[in-house]
Image (cartoon, rainbow, N blue to C red; front, side, top):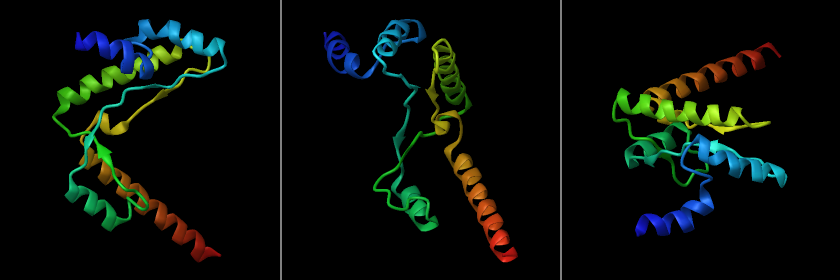
Length: 135
């Protein structure tokens, strides 16, 4: 009963379908009316307050009131998430101007992804400082 109510109310309002095949008619109807669709696999969990505090200290949460990341439970879950993301990309590829949003934190260990992001920020800052030194 609960499943039926959710599908007829919230799910039907926010979701085009349950899989790549079932969303195609909804996407076609939207496109016919000039509305595009973004396919997204939204999987996330609350960020640990200690991690949020660390993000604030490093400047990664400037003007951010909250943050959410996927809690890493192992490579098996990351692989399963990757399959769903690939399925979303495949479904989007069947539409003219198809678009799929990818939440990278669903694809691996968030601390590693955060470290990679920090390294990229530091490298960017280095290049900016080197460029300003040349001026």
